[in-house]
Length: 123
Image (cartoon, rainbow, N blue to C red; front, top):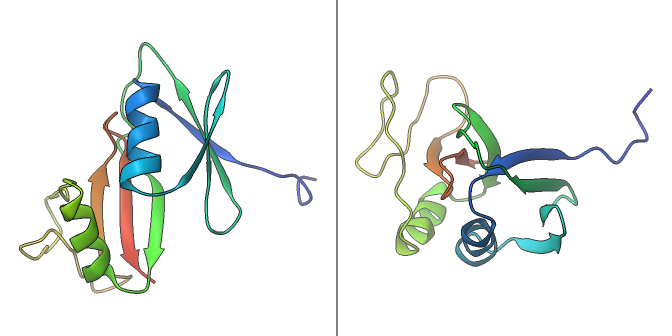
């Protein structure tokens, strides 16, 4: 039914200006402005829409994952931009916050300025 649809994801933020600076400046994504919010274009061609919400509550789950070839280099780059990786109970994370679960890729979680959870993971 939707196989040919140009589907996209979306989630709320509490401050469009801070979101623009973080996603465009800190993360280096292509950001476009729309009267209703911000559009992010991912390397895959996928799209994400960020919309302002006065009653925004941060997602309690990962809303966007960034696969990378070298997670150590990616975490170093994030840290240099002032981003801190989150720490979660139940995950064995190294001193930098990178988890290496028995199943799945090496992964680290961080938050956008609105508190939404993002991740960087070894591809």
